[in-house]
Amino acid sequence: MPATSAGRLSIPEDVVFEVLDGEAVVLNLKTGIYFTLNQVGTRAWQLIREHGELSKVRDVMLAEYEVEAAVLDADLKELAEQLRSKGLLAQTGANP
Image (cartoon, rainbow, N blue to C red; front, top):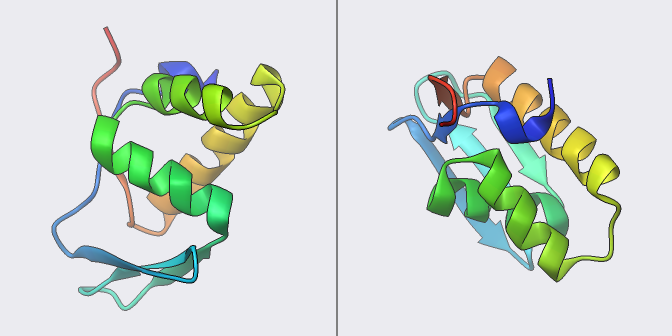
């Protein structure tokens, strides 16, 4: 499944994040599970929080970074899957 068709993403209420020197730590306060993100991952997280859809995150990041669309799609899908599997990101429904 392409990253751009993954559905609406949201950040659960128990999840917080802190940016330090351009990198983020994402923490689920309920479970204690955390995840660290590099600068590019931090930007993706901020865009997920802002837009809630990987297709919009993809569009912004393609404009900001020199990256092939297929590579970015795969990376965003992998990041979203990792965050969802750790309870740091939730997915609902499908994109229109």
